[in-house]
Amino acid sequence: MALAVAGFTLGIRNVSSLRPHEDVIPRHVDQLASEMTREGMQRDPIIIDRDSAAVLDGMHRLAAFQRLGIENAVCCAVEYSSAGVKLGRWARVYKLGAGDSLKRALEEMGGMRRTPLAEAFSALERRDVGLAVLTPDAAFVQGAAPDHAKVVESMRSMDRLAEANGWSRSFVPEDEVDVPLQQPQRFVVLSRRITKEDVVGAARTGKLFPCKTSMHMIDPRPVAVDYPLADLGRATSQQLKSRLGGREGTILPAGSLYGGRRYKERLLFLGQP
Image (spheres, rainbow, N blue to C red):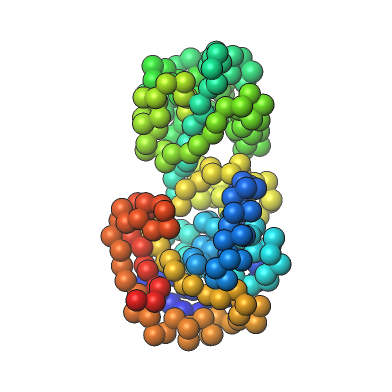
């Protein structure tokens, strides 16, 4: 019933069966819903775990489908335990306003202790601490290893603090945290190492991570299925297979730019030549 490609399957799934594991950013959902309506297409598939239907990539696409009342979506189902699916993290970058200080932010957070950067990174990898606030010279970490709920609440508390103070927030991959630390008035918040079990657990229980916590890399990542929204309501996986049957697909190398984003993994471009 579904199209087998590069170790995963592309098929049509009812959006009510899909389980997000992260919150979304409302304005991104608005933008994506408007873009989908304007183009009349689902450009890229929602990527899910084959066994649990946990959404690994495409939380905002799922929310846009729900916003638009579209019942079906093109999904890429992957074997989450496979080596071809890698799990990383996004780091939060906050820019302090004029006259604000990191000291005040740490006081608002409470329970933070100073530690060398290398020690903080090791503690995050061991999951001994929930999160770390990183600066160019040192880090500040929470106390003893908290449970999942406390880690999530700490991250949301930092987001609320930033919003209340008018600090801007952006995101970088975990291996690029050194870049914003070289810029003035910025600090970085990085959560402890998350596992695939954490992701599936959040999806199954509905106890979601804050937005932009996990970063999944699927190699190769399928893009550009370009399925008309008007046809999705009655679409089947067999019809998807027929629609894509005449497309050869092109592998784009890691580092390719697609849709305004540069991807670390290879892309399987399924669009029309």
